Structure formats: C-alpha cells, structure tokens
Picture 1 (cartoon, rainbow, N blue to C red):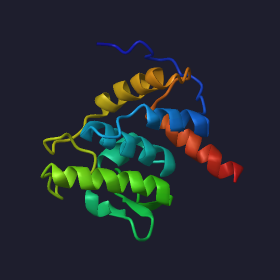
Picture 2: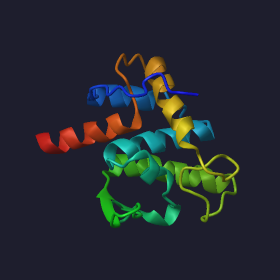
Picture 3: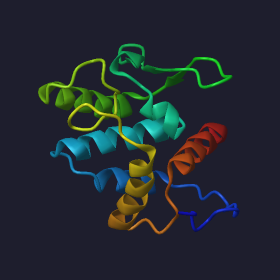
Picture 4: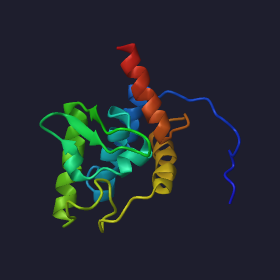
Length: 157
C-alpha cells in the first residue's frame, strides 16, 4: 500500500508546551499502555530522540541518577547521551515500575508491549495522531515533530 503522502514534503509544525501537555494528558495514567505511551511521548519530546532510537532503548540505557539516556548508535552514527529533566524521567520511572509489575524482564526493549515484545514504529505513527485528536490538538503530530519541537526549544534557550 502506498502512503497518501508519498513524495510530498509537509512543513514541520512545532508544538507548544501546552500541546505536549495535552498529548500527555490524553494518555491513561492508570492503564499500563497509557503509562508506557506517556513515557514514550515524553522521551521523544524531552530527549529529542528519533522514533527508531527511542524504540531501540533498553532499561539499562536510562540513567535516572545522571538524568541522561544512553542512545545506541545507528548505522554510521556514534553513541550519544541525551539529557532529560526530572519530570520527564519521573514518567519513565513510572513506566519502569509498571513493566516490572507485569513481569517484563530487563532484556526487553524499554518501550515494549505488555508481553515484552517490540513496539512497532507503525503503532506509534498511528498513536500520535489519535492522541492529538483526543487532546484537541489540531496540528499534525508525529514523532519527528516532537524532535523538532525539542530542538526549537533548545535553540530558544
């Protein structure tokens, strides 16, 4: 199946902090998948990770004490560290506790299914627009847009 936007380049739409808060609020705070999705969205946003980088993380890559995430190298790239604030790390810690209570081992990806399997990028690509609609965010919301928003905020600082 050919994507509807094949060959078109759409301009990036930056999200406001209120938009991101609305996205996070649209995720359940009690269901394990909602806790995972909140942690994933905040990681994409506050660490400025690419979707494939976030989905490749394992729990050992998160250093809560130092406030950093160790990002594994992609093809032709180098490993790096991405900083995260305490509030964002708190959401990741909540997911780590939830996944431990589900019996998911440390060898499973950080952002995994409830059975410990990989979360597919297509799931996240469908999730973000659904969350945006639920949150009342009328912009195009996608993982790379969260990364752009992070970069713009850093540049503004």
